[in-house]
Length: 216
Image 1 (cartoon, helix red, strand yellow):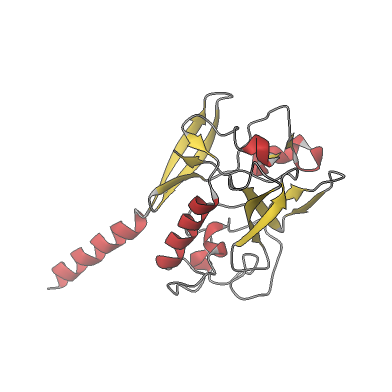
Image 2 (tube, one colour):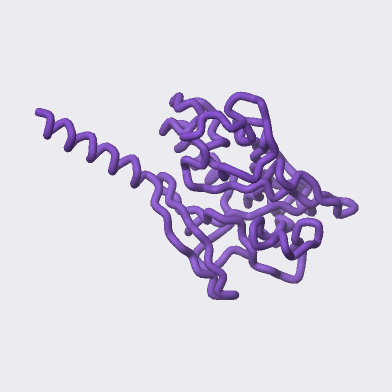
């Protein structure tokens, strides 16, 4: 009986560990490599895109030294056409699919199924502004849930318009969706160091945000 129980425990552990599968993507345009992660039925880049183009593409604070860690910030029109071949800018619905998977599979900071507090499981376990709010990304609590998904979100900040000021590096990350990209405003997702949930907002299409491509 003990052998049977141990075998079952090992099998369950294997299923859990294989829920997310890591990989590598090579962008043939510049030969940069990116970590990828399979979460549920989707395969996502596990790093922000860092492919440089001539239009609507900015390093944070116009400092190229920030690109290796945070990638570039892109205008949303550029975002729709800059992912590598075989990959694309995710729609609002594809982000929702990711969030739903994590909520339904107990990736919230306290492990409660259905809890919307999944930001900690999406974010890197360091590099975020400190927070004292329970379950927030910047709070050093619930250590087993920090970046549990392997998505490795970073607080790469944003570029605003008009004026082109940069803000929120270290405290918040913003990612474009393709939904609304061809009209006045597009949906995005944001993860903040001081909040446990993922935010869904609409931003002016001329602003700059990060990109996570998803596999076709």
